Length: 286
Image (tube, rainbow, N blue to C red; front, side, top):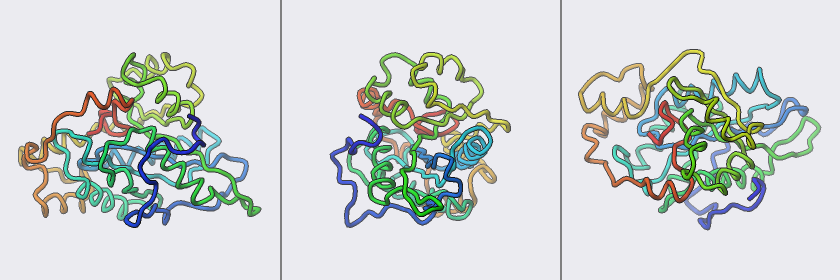
């Protein structure tokens, strides 16, 4: 399915309880020669870390100096509770932690609750369809300086392990790979220990839609490590935003991952073509 086609998912795109967060989405383009771009990071964010936020800044710098894109906004899309994974706090908690992190640290990042609100697991391809629909069909894209409108390109922002799973046979369906990499494209942040060149070499048909970002200051903080520190009663100060730490302490989250653990959903990921999370130091829905 092409990226500008109707969304795949049967779930309603809007409801009385949902409103697309457009308050930080820039609606007027500065340079009409460039391609307007919105970045979307899907993930558990359990909890959100500085690396999740930093990835957007790295992508913005890369786009500014190495591409013809003009970034108009960035969105975090936390996975819903149907993604049954050990250590996953409820969607309500994860959404609020993402909101606290972005509200106080960024002027251009937003949190979209749509995916987290769904009662069923939503594959990455359908999440991107949702953003395509809300941004270009509902809002009408972006205005050029001359007042005319044009569509905004939506792309996935991901950790390095995502592209590695995409290059592994039988993990993602050909249909989803074509939909995500062919129709939308992705910005991939390098990670030590992941051979991105090897992974991309197996995805040559999509090479023009894959942008690899070098991590100049290496950061391997992950949600998994944060949860481990919390279980061991170790400090996580300066690893994640202070308001998020306060929220975790207030609600007693992650003291015992078993309290919020759910059965693995690995089989569903493979059949749906969403075998790995788009963001995180490990590239998994951490």
